[in-house]
Length: 343
Image (cartoon, rainbow, N blue to C red):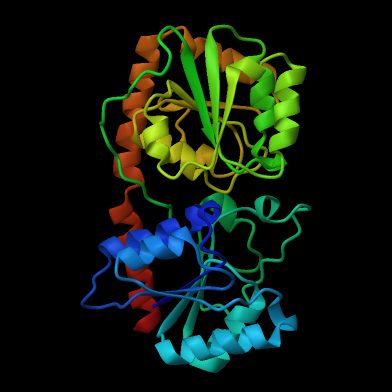
């Protein structure tokens, strides 16, 4: 099995999670797993190598216009002789090269909505040259035209580790996301401007960071907001959060929200995309309309004022993550898909 990813940079970690899961749990007597990065290598490549995965980077940057890059990809595939090429990145060109150069079965795996991966939300999602399409949620599956993708939810490790408090007497709100408009962080910053006695920690980075810092200053909450940048071990940072908030405008799944649930943290999220597939309203957290700081603030206030409610919702969230969204479940579903393709 050859998995194809875009980059080994840390900000692409969400895409590499599935590959890491398979490298840990897949039947190694049946499958051999390799990874090709279409662009550059990086920390994710090092992490996979440490697990014994064959990792290569071929510097293919411009799709079909980059003929040398396509040839490097073709040579890499021929040397690996894959039965299946599992594409987590790349458009039509890598699919065609996989078919022509390697004669492999091709899986296209979508991990986000078009609105998340292109500024205008017009990314084409064609089933052409794909033997199977996998989507990370029903919401993502609906963005693919003319076929019905196989939906396989990402998995996380559930833990009952004791959470640590940040500042005593201060409610800590957390969010982990790329700092881009579609993540709706500005609405969360505005929401906390209506609340007292809390601190917001934002894990992540991106092109909107400077604008968000100005937004915090405009609403007078700069001292109440910490921009932490990219965080390698997000679970360690999450462990002292009281509430996790995902204020996205569009979201194919919401892996960070699920990670928070696995730690027993109640989640408030917008009622969009795959988030409504993760969160059970009033049981593991709350769903609010997108772009609505007032409703967001009201739910934060409700949870913030009731530690017992936070504990109940958090424990239900942890149990749901463990039973419905485990790594074992994800790996078994993908391995079953491989078996059907190869039969």
